[in-house]
Length: 254
Image 1 (tube, one colour):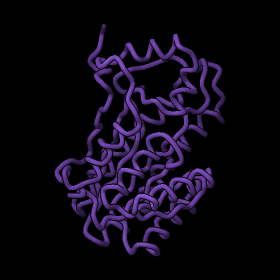
Image 2 (cartoon, helix red, strand yellow; image 1 turned 90 degrees about the vertical axis):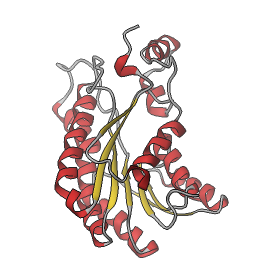
Image 3 (tube, rainbow, N blue to C red; image 1 turned 90 degrees about the horizontal axis):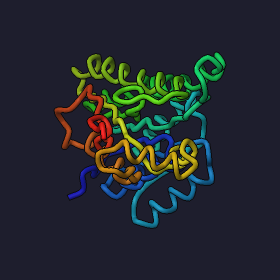
């Protein structure tokens, strides 16, 4: 039986990586999906793939740092499909990297805006629509970086993603009485364009692989299955969690 039959979901950062894999999985599990990202052509390809498999999807390109875009995604879900049950606020960036003493104030602020403020703006407009129909599930993509593990040179990324965990807990507490569940998924290394951009040589990739108990990095599809759990009724008593999906990176010292 499909896990998301008759559900309507928003997925941001859907043009590639974990977001794309999750949008495809949500559709295969019966959800009607509204996909968002900046790259319109990639979104169009994703929608075509979902429809070719018999699913339902519609796309809206835009920048998640815009509150108007957050409003528009919710409005599209309601106008197209009549409701909103699930929101996977996944869009993010590595931001400005390098020695923290050299990172610009603008670069730090832009990273927080993309990774943290955009998630807040998304939830701000998603929650009221979910409350209208008795509840829903919101999921954020945080990371193990800055939570159970740290790397030099990624202070802005780590701070912004750690902030998502605080946001998760605050929203879960605030809207739990209205049956809106809020959780964060914390991936370890995942084979995505962002991962390859940060680890662009064999030596770096081997180092990161070794950090995990499973001695490999994840596929986007593996993360999508964990997001599906948090989106579905299988996790009906799960809220406010920072859910590690890290291949054992948090417990590995060898």
